[in-house]
Length: 236
Image 1 (cartoon, rainbow, N blue to C red):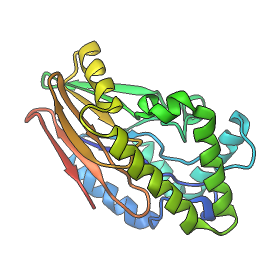
Image 2 (image 1 turned 30 degrees about the horizontal axis):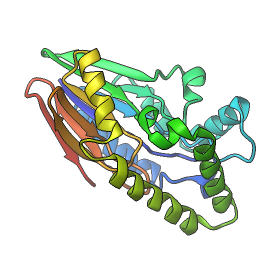
Image 3 (image 1 turned 60 degrees about the horizontal axis):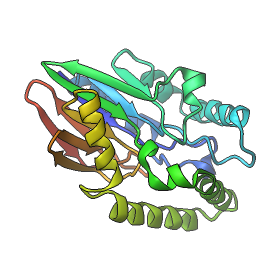
């Protein structure tokens, strides 16, 4: 079985909030290619950005999710297809109760077991200072609302770079969590998103791969071939 994994689209509820930055038709053509060369396509969370609203809460997040989906109706219809499986992340957690998106997914084929999870569950900042992390997301949303998207992107870029340097290495918290998951689920591979930085680590228990991000016009994704037991990162 060939599986494509991609994550972190960050489709916003409004144009000024959106970080997807793809023409819908062009991204659908990219998905056509993936569908033609893969058996399944896994969306590994943060497909939508639902936490940039002025007020917090599930009802507000659900409304943001509905608006984001309405902005790209053809893409949303495609993502409901039988080849696609969607797990939620932290920025689209409301997709759990609203769309039935689970937190994890396991696929086993050809004697090869793969576990998919967004990865925010193992982010030390999210774990220890969740309110502060959510406040930072709210703040960058306000910057975008004020027309200061480049400044918001600068803050987010610094956050990505610092977190990857501190936490993304082979002895970091994501790799440690992956080792525990590999043992607990008797898995061969753990697939995460969240950090926006694609990378592959070979661990004593198996492997962990990060899908990178499809935000800001990128088309980064991972291909897993269960028969060949191969994992490839594609940066575009």
